[in-house]
Image (spheres, rainbow, N blue to C red):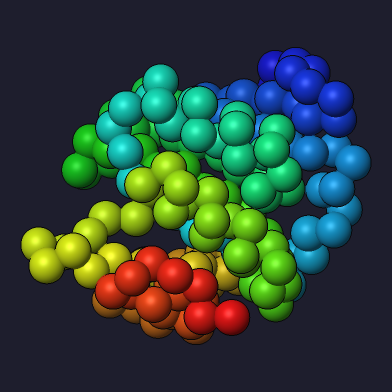
Length: 154
């Protein structure tokens, strides 16, 4: 582990596969049974680093991580992932995180300009090995925003 304080209450930690940014003053708010993440796939590690760092420093999320080059090398697609963590039952946290994602153009659009209905994934689903066809989203972007306009529903 390679822990570095990067801002007031925010640390950066790195291992072989992941670079984490954690708000140490709020991390205890994350609940093991309710925690999950919005994800963004990318091969641009420099951009990924900026995104996860900013998301935590600005308070958009409590914790975020990105793949390392070593982790990306193991990926069949050659891409990595940024994960933005919050409790799945916290509507205000979803709003902050989604606002960050949309504000940074991290949700792709269809050819018609509609936002893809990306999924929120609970950590329990990850621990249970739910990937690909085995993954069934319980929360999606359309639960919070109009996919055509990008405006929040409430």
